[in-house]
Length: 242
Image (tube, rainbow, N blue to C red; front, side, top):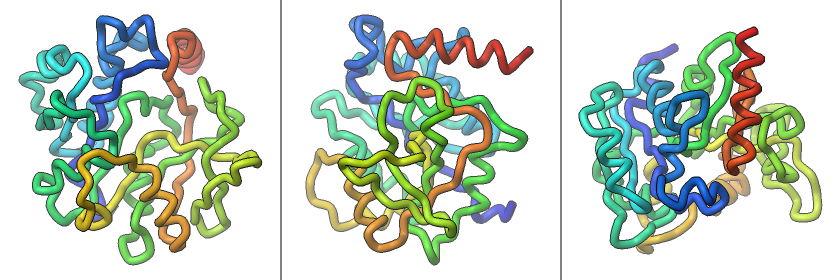
């Protein structure tokens, strides 16, 4: 892949309260919940390291000390912490807070439950190869809702033949779910004045402009959003090794 297309930095969202994962998150933050013997955040960071991402900016809020201690000393990728202990900023606000660290280049965004069984090649590398800043403001890794593990929604997006994503109609069903991973331009947030705000409206605005695109995941997406989903994900991982 062209070296200049692979983002060197990722924003890893680890500040959430993990309410759907209770009671497991009563004393442990969701990013440290283990799936197949490894904390969720390590599944994400290991994947970033394998694809050559140099720096992961990890935001902290809920039970922040535990996450800070867990990632301390990690060098691949290098972890930079963004402290949100005083105010939970949501994903959009979390990005705005670290814009000086992100610079002008596009960057990866990663939820800490962004987890999948890889297909024949790296999905993040495929995402980077598909990135076209002239046509795109954001490029999201999406998965088929019908075949993904742990998906209990009616989908997030439809996709046109040329890869443009369109928001699901409120009363309809969409075939694709957002996996929590994408590439996005920092310029989208340059004029934002709020401290705390959601990320999704920026996706929807880009979609209205025809500048939100999707890359379909190869493999099997595992959404680990509830305690019950842990067993489902581990079973899928076990089956994939047979």
